[in-house]
Image 1 (spheres, one colour):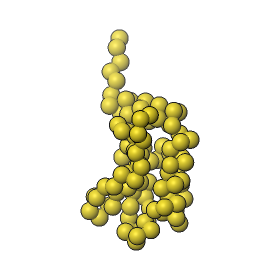
Image 2 (cartoon, helix red, strand yellow; image 1 turned 90 degrees about the vertical axis):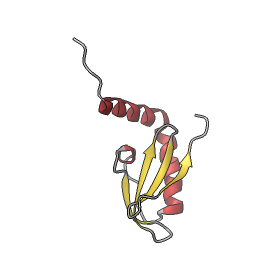
Image 3 (cartoon, one colour; image 1 turned 120 degrees about the horizontal axis):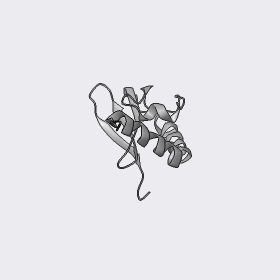
Length: 97
């Protein structure tokens, strides 16, 4: 009997791979992003940045309210989204890899 692989299974597997291969490096990059954009916010576990909702911050250094931070794949990058207008900004992206 063949078990079907769902998109959720593939996503979970991809997230586990990313964390095992780049986990420490991503934490360093996130620390830098937080230092520059969200100095009063605490880092969350890396898994939280990989889910669809990302991690919420009350505001960024510029005073933009309700921001979410995401780790996205293909290419591996960190995105910041303003929730009011859904504007996205890539604040870090891996080159090469």
